[in-house]
Image (spheres, rainbow, N blue to C red):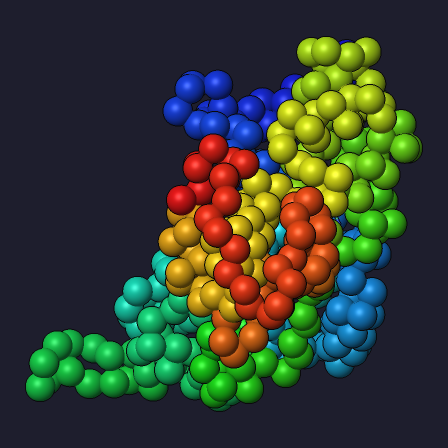
Length: 373
Ligand SMILES: Nc1ncnc2c1ncn2[C@@H]1O[C@H](COP(=O)(O)OP(=O)(O)OP(=O)(O)O)[C@@H](O)[C@H]1O
Ligand SMILES: [Mg+2]
């Protein structure tokens, strides 16, 4: 197959692939940035709201907020974007700046350890600038408090000196727009959440929207692709554009090595099965979570931390990466007593649910070879 732009191809090569230390099959459906080089993601990002497929509600609401601000010639309300990984929060933050025709400053909660880090960023903002705070729920408490004041009053107290001689010099900031992104909106303290005038919650994409995203990506990557193949990939991408784009690249790889070079249905099916994505689009972690609940805990309820230990993952990964999609698709229920597998989960694993409620099943043989716990 020919026709790759060399720029994109270079960016697509993940340094971790092929050196033996990284198991590319381990988490192809992980929505986090496992095998994604930032550059290829950036190349596939829509730049304007009009090119952004899916999320109609958030798109229309945000479009209105931005257009009104543009007409007033003033910065819009601060924008908070929440939702599972890979649904387009960072993409939308870039779009906000592009639509406002303003520069954007990018930083993240974990990068701001001290209030002073934030003070120096804030005091260097220019009028109208967009400040993108990724993973805003991971900011330190003192920085958070400084941010409230800056967001509300466009003011920051710069502390000069140390110890008893230290003085706080109030500094007035030019109006600017904070765009915050978080996978865990629930972890944001209420005072911070309240200072965002607009909150957009991103939900999993419809299959038709993912198809449009894949058509666009195939075009940008110069990958010849048949429509039914893209439909198959879209169906099995966990409602997540980042996963869709990643699977497209793996199907392209398969087509180049074993097929005609064209992304067709046979290539899609073969590559998806090679990378352990099942018919429902569930990957190994998803299935491990369901299997643990069904086989080890008799269908639940089981607590999150116990479940995470059982599958050998961080609680955060289980909670933010695997669970939202499983809940959304009706495989799993979160209850105050813990996680419970639904009849759909039992059926998907080819197991029979216990007759009475909560009858623990004997520890059955694991089909995943015990990799997950
Ligand atoms: N609506 C969309 N249309 C086309 N591509 C999209 C869309 N949303 C996301 N993508 C693609 O998915 C990739 C991941 O999106 P993005 O980085 O914005 O997700 P995120 O929500 O910020 O994820 P994280 O929580 O991991 O930071 C983007 O690089 C882009 O290629
Ligand atoms: Mg992001």
